[in-house]
Image (tube, rainbow, N blue to C red):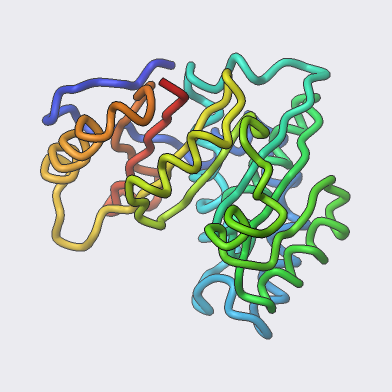
Length: 242
């Protein structure tokens, strides 16, 4: 599914959350993660305390949208090994759902989760063990880790780098792009701020991206909604090396 369009007034794509989950093992695959995260959320602020199981399943479906695009399907080869970096992972979104989904289609993921908050980082370590996922947790700020920590030698290391709901500047984008393998992808998830329309957001986002085109190749950018949450639009942008 190729979803890129420079047309500012293109309508958001609507995805059915249940169908998205069904393509990658179904809700049952993600239930252990949902149950564990919500139980731990009573002690650690991983997601909003008002988050219900239905809300969390919808959030997980949101994390999986990139796997439905042409720009990532070339990575979905049975038996492949895939290195995945999730920056500012928090409660493991989107990294853990992506890793579970990849494993369900016969791909071996190795997760690197970067989370500077100690309590959340410890939760992520426990979650990897609980879910049987291969990976590591870096319990420090991403930029610090790049400058002097475990990610200092990360150039060209990752097939997939994800950043969710954290606004990147040009310096951060440059560092992320340098972390990609030649065939790697950077996926940026964004939520629309209150009061901002799809058209306004798309216009601003495209102007910003075009100013930074020297840093990367823009593969796809689009607005979308999830069934059951149609009032809130999101945007997804997929980039690669120039």
